[in-house]
Image 1 (tube, rainbow, N blue to C red):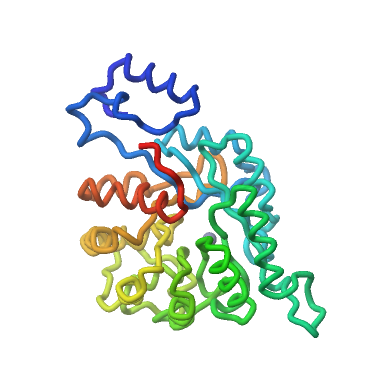
Image 2: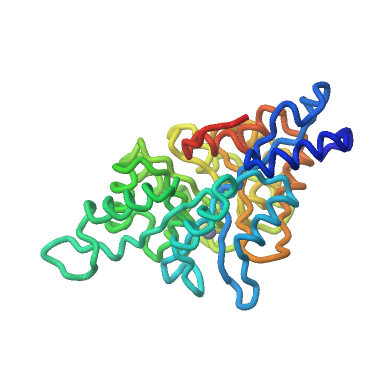
Length: 329
Ligand SMILES: [Zn+2]
């Protein structure tokens, strides 16, 4: 909160918050401070539950984190595939949090496409792409705005994953995916991701994690897909992310977790230019999943002194647009 705020502004803000209107309104800040006022974040990536035993993040805990860091709304992403978390975090948890805090929580849903059966097989309980569409529509009607975190042990363009991408396109929900050397794996240059971008041009694909963000660098290796870079580490030109974002406007980057942070921090000069160059396709996120988690993104991005319009797009406007959320600002 800028120190130029008066006590009256703060009180007014508290009243607005109580009334359920949690979006900054022009009346909450002095007119001459508009340019320097803090942009309230939309966090594209959070999790509820106990990823680590005894470190459960509850909806109340998440709200406390959001209030401490100026996050207006947060996407809660279920984790249901066996490769995604030690204990599954179901879509019902995200929906319950949304019911409790409808102005602050944006629920996502997850379906593991390995549940799909294509007749005459009898391997799963979801009847083909249509079965997936039925499930996704039910989640959508309950309030879900996106699919994810999509984090399976299948190659990124495995046949069953393609069923999910087809169903996602049909229900018109973006999909947020994890990509490293084991989960939805791909190889340097991201050929599997490119195949999907080409095959599903209307599907917004939001990538994150070590393999996705290693691909900011033209010299990314297979080993880099399973680890984070040492800081500092110069970014070599010719990275797959720049090439694919240029060619496919449906590719987005989720800047959460160490992958997103280190992609920018490893080479601050390149990172700053990348954020500016790809400002329409990048989304602020934390991947907060336990209490008292340190999130370096807040300070890192602020330290880069990015143009105000770039901050606004990355911190909130791109997410609002992508998730089709009416903006009250
Ligand atoms: Zn992830």
